[in-house]
Length: 344
Image (cartoon, rainbow, N blue to C red; front, side, top):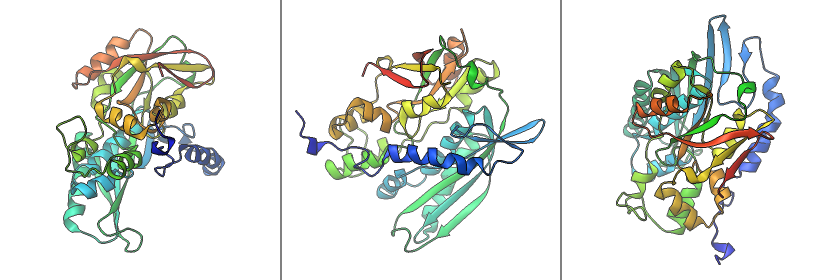
């Protein structure tokens, strides 16, 4: 039996998901108090909507890449986190039926290294090009004393236009099928846990081989967060999608339940896919139970689509058009607005 002292929890690594969820609930009234006539959408959705006129429904989102920036800084690889950021934000507004229009970045550091900043923003620009999004501008902030030497933070702000009129949440009904879209690794969450396990506990360095692979630790951890915009465009154009959940912080349970009505439960078949080796290693070496791993990490699934009735093949074919092997991963049942992980 594993010694409890050897278990590395996400909270012990510095991230308490319960506190974050409680804060979200506390902020609802604060956010609601600012709503103006054009504001739309539900609090807690993947993006916030704003109607400019009768024909233009804007969707906006803001996010960062978390402590993945510390892995990038330790590895000396700075040209991928910017692309991560744009793809992450693109997926968030995609879940609301929007394609991106423009993007703004915020790069903050203790001491400005022009080469590092250029590499980071170059990644942002590459992500914008890939997603058909204009990089309108941004902010570079140099704040010695706030950030340690050699470290930086990165955030982004995206605005898109809602062009796919997804059904209301009330149409997410029992009998519909869940389609999983594979991730390219951890994407942009779970890095506090990964760093604690790989660097602190196992003593690995970015250039060392990742356990069980021929790739380096930095190769595995710095894989770019996948954008699903192009892979879902055909399915969205054909009205084959009822809802989408971008699987980020909080894992499958925390994100999929955001699209569920209170009388529907999503049953996810965790045996329908095999998590890539990085998730196996983090699970084994952290000592965490499967349920907590699924809360901290995406476990190899970056997006879950609720397919329209009888349209599962269309969604899977849409993903295949971009080389993504999507798969059926569960179903919706009558229930209580929660997600049940079958098989763990």
